[in-house]
Length: 238
Image 1 (spheres, rainbow, N blue to C red):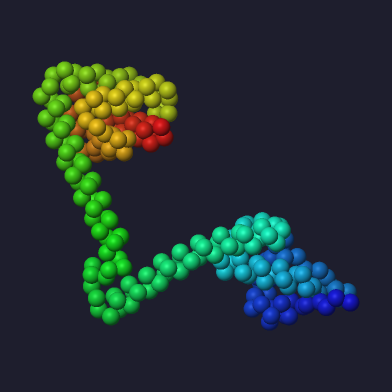
Image 2: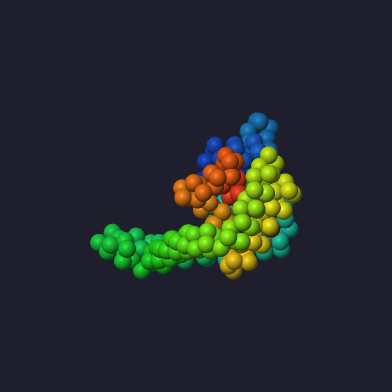
């Protein structure tokens, strides 16, 4: 007769709690049998399955993923474990780097001088500086080119009026899409802007008070915000 493991046996062998075993039974992840005395019991296959569950949990798989993995044949199961192992290797490297940084900070090194953190901090500074530069350039180019060249100014304002005419539509509407593309074409005649930059410009229309004041002349409340939403929606999903 096959040996049967009690809940206590399973707890002692694997270190899981009684509550966890009951939970796994309840959700069907590891179902127990009942002996003649109506106690929950497990067999050898159940023990192996539980050890697999614990292994997968230790590798950061959630319960839903574990349930699916347990249904795979052994070859596929091992392949999934292999892929997750590579992910864990990367995580271990990051944690080791973090540990080094923490130890340096504990030992009195100023956080700004910790080499392991400087890479990310420098990237943040670079991104912030780039955004500041872009916004400054946008303001300068808008003022210099848009207001001093009458033809360009008229064409720009014509497109803004087209935006005004479609504000009753959702930004997802094809009519709004056409105006957004027309605006994009106009802007790219002036400067070589990528879509990210164009979205930033549209955001400046909305967020910068000076631009807000300019757009008031179109007598369409919220037009700057509408242009910003329309451009960001269509250029980020194009």
